[in-house]
Structure formats: C-alpha cells, structure tokens
Length: 111
Image 1 (tube, rainbow, N blue to C red):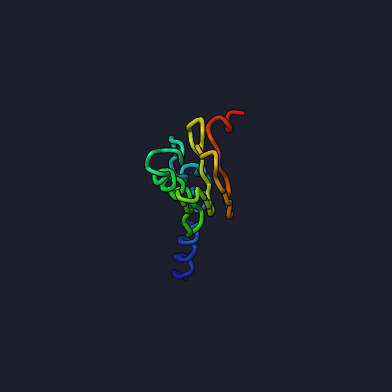
Image 2: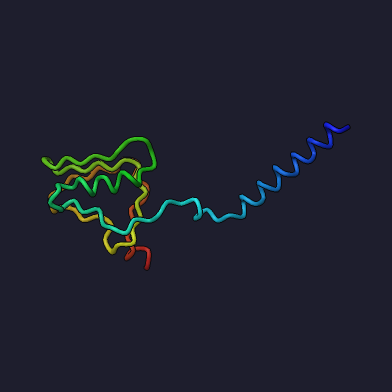
C-alpha cells in the first residue's frame, strides 16, 4: 500500500515538471543570435567568417572554405544575424549548399 502511494507521488511530481517545462518558451533554450556578418572578403581570407558559420551548424560536419579556388561548401547551417547583411561574398565564388537550413539577415526578417 505504501509503495503504491509513493509511486503515485513520484508520478505527480514528474507530470508537474513536464507541465512546467512545456510552458517555457523555446526561445529560452535558443542560442544567442549573431550580430556580425560572415565576411569572406576580409583580409583574413574568410577564416573568421567560416568560424562564425560553423558556430551555427546543425550537424556534425563543418562547412569548408577554400580561399585558393574561392569555393564555399555550407553543411547544415542555420545562421541568423542581427546585421543588415548575413553573408558578404566575393564576386567569383563557387557555393555549394549541403543541407543548409537557413541564412537570414536583419533586413530579411523585417520584411
């Protein structure tokens, strides 16, 4: 009898915690939005831009940038920034999107 009562109390606590967690907005668990532009025209050859984009990856594989051949391969990117421009790219560029999810700038989100 005591075991049944104890299990009922545990179930009550677990269900209460589930209800409380379901009320928390998902934005509370979100990572902070970037405020800078991924600038592949910078003097560092795009290293900082690639590091910024790889912070926003959704999978396990990193995106790659070959400065010699000007080839950008995006793998599983979900990048949103408060900056006006999300990506600043070169005029001659090969861009491959492999499971890229979303790339948005502030100007796009205000439309």
